[in-house]
Image (tube, rainbow, N blue to C red):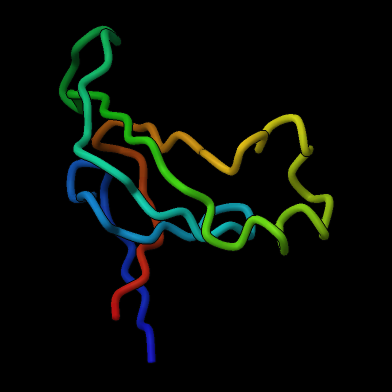
Length: 88
C-alpha cells in the first residue's frame, strides 16, 4: 500500500510520483535549475513528468485538455513549494 509524504521542491527526485490536481505525475529525469532571480529559497527547479492516469484526468474535465496535450506536465518550484509524493 502506498503512503504519502509532503516534501519540498528541493527533495524531489527522478522517479517520484507527485499527486497534483487529481493527477499522478511521474518525474522522468533530473531536476533543472531555472533562471529565476535568486533569494533565500533558491534555487527554483523544474522537472518534466508523465501523467500516469491520463485517461482518468481527461474524463474528469478538471484539467483542460489543451493543458495536458500529450500527457506531459511540468513540476516547478523553489524551496517554499510543497508536493505530495507517493511512496511505495
